[in-house]
Image 1 (tube, helix red, strand yellow):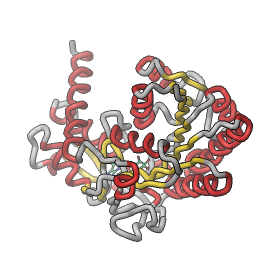
Image 2: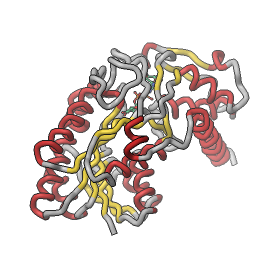
Image 3: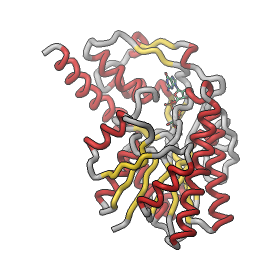
Length: 331
Ligand code: GDR
């Protein structure tokens, strides 16, 4: 039986990945930070097969203990301060957790590997935010990185540190440059879920409209369940490497609104949508579209859920959730 340790296990990707690994027969450990963390309590209820370990990416000794206790074959570093807009207000915290946290995790793995002699494989969750002000369209593994947010800068640090540990210490350390990936488990601060929740609530008469930021930004959106499969495939290769994971299609926020509102039979969504500078970013990433040719060729990875099905799946999920919540408050 193989063993995996996942940081950021309470996030969307951590949950999907833990299920994938559990189905493959892995013993799964998950790092959860803080005392009485409600997300940890919820994880224990919904994913009882995960063994929860306490630790924090800022605290190297806690990571060394987590690695020693779990004796992992594979470590997936998904933990981060991950909301881009928040990173301008919390640039130092983001740099520490999302950037230096990667170094701490790499050190903990290297220390354990050197003492145990076990070949531990490492996955780093890099991000398309690293491309920022894009220098090439579409973006691939060799595209020059030009991050546009403190979050993007921190991810670049973690990305190059992962490559550096691979080259300096012969570690099996791979980096997945994942483009935006969404699901019904996405946090409501991200634009797809903010829209799917609002559309469901507007349809049910629970909310009158939605206020957004830049409607012209374009993203390459895939399904998180497809993307965690790519993470696992990277660690099954003989050689560690970096891979772009993307659908190769890009859509604007306006197109997202077209599909989401269409799912509830609304075509003139403009009457429900307003914009507010509050949701604009000091520096925007205007266009992302990934070229995942390498992942397709080397890993044999293909996305299964397309943009249209993804957004409709999220709206339908939120219709169910909101209907149940409304029924519970007005029985
Ligand atoms: P992103 O995701 O920043 O790409 O990072 P997000 O969904 O927050 O924004 C996508 C685009 O939508 C525009 N936008 C809005 N965004 C939010 N959150 N709220 C709004 O009201 C709104 N209006 C317009 C944004 O300006 C942006 O252009 C995500 C995160 O998951 C990162 O952690 C991850 O690394 C990358 O995807 C890949």
